[in-house]
Figure 1 (cartoon, helix red, strand yellow):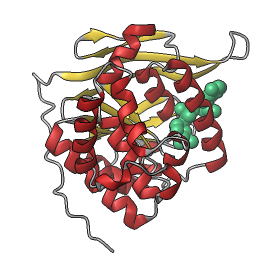
Figure 2 (tube, helix red, strand yellow):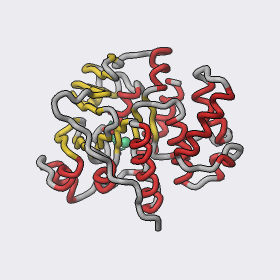
Figure 3 (tube, helix red, strand yellow):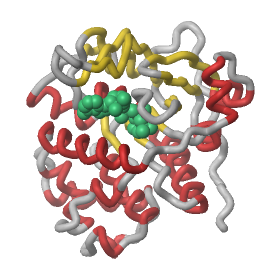
Figure 4 (cartoon, helix red, strand yellow):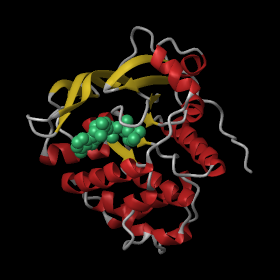
Length: 290
Ligand SMILES: Nc1ncnc2c1ncn2[C@@H]1O[C@H](COP(=O)(O)OP(=O)(O)OP(=O)(O)O)[C@@H](O)[C@H]1O
Ligand SMILES: [Mg+2]
C-alpha cells in the first residue's frame, strides 16, 4: 500500500478581509412542478475562498449534489444568489454560462459514466479546449502538461477509457477538469467509488493540485475521514440546510450541532442505486447544458 505523501493543506484565512471566490447566499432549489414540488435546498449559504477546499457532508438526500448542480447552473435557482469572483452567475444562460466552464469545472464520483467510451483519452482531454477555440497544437501542449500533473504517461493518449482502472480513470477525469485551468472544481464524491488505497493516492493528488495551481474545491463526501484530510473548512448539510460550518479538523473532532454529532458517530452510507439514478439524470442535464 502506498502511504499518503502530500502534506496536509495549510489553513486558509477566513478572518475579516477574506474574499470569497464563490459566494452562495440563501439559495433555494425546488424539484418538480408547483403542485407536489420538493424543496431540496432551503436558503443555503456557503463561501469558498481562492485556494480553499470546503467540504460538504451530510446523509444521502440532504442536498449536497443539488448545491453542486446549482453552482454549475444545472438546476434552476428559485431564489437567492450565487456570485463567482464578484459576478452574479445565478441565472446565466447559453453562451455566457458555457464561458464560465473555463472557471468552474466538475469531477463526478463515477469516472466510468463521465468519460465517453468511444473517444480516445487524447480526444477526451483536448475536446474542452478545441470546442472553446484553442488550436490543436496548443491543446496538445496543455493536455500533455495536465497528464504530467495527474501523473499519467503520455502513451495513454491513443487508448480508450475501458483500458483503465477506476483510479486511472479518475485521474483522466481530473485532467479533463483541469485542461481549461479552472479556479473552482465541484468534486462530487470523487473518491467514493475507489478502493481505500486508490482513494488515498487520489486525495493526495487533489491536495497537490491545489497546492500547485491554487484551485478551489467544493468537495462533497460521505466520508468524514476523507474530508478531515483534504478540507480546510466543512459544512454539514441536513435536509436541505447547512446546519454547521467550521474548521475541518475541529468540526470533525468536536461537532457542535446534534446532527453533526450523529453524523460523526454513524458515517452515512451512500445509497448506490439512488445515486446511480441521480448521476444518470445529472449527466443528461450536463449534456443538455454543454
Ligand atoms: N431531479 C430530481 N427530481 C426530483 N427530486 C430530486 C432530483 N434530484 C434530487 N432530488 C431529491 O432532492 C434531494 C436532494 O438530493 P441530492 O442528490 O442533492 O442529495 P445528496 O445529498 O447529494 O445525496 P447522496 O449522498 O445520496 O448523493 C433528495 O431528496 C432527492 O431525492
Ligand atoms: Mg449526491
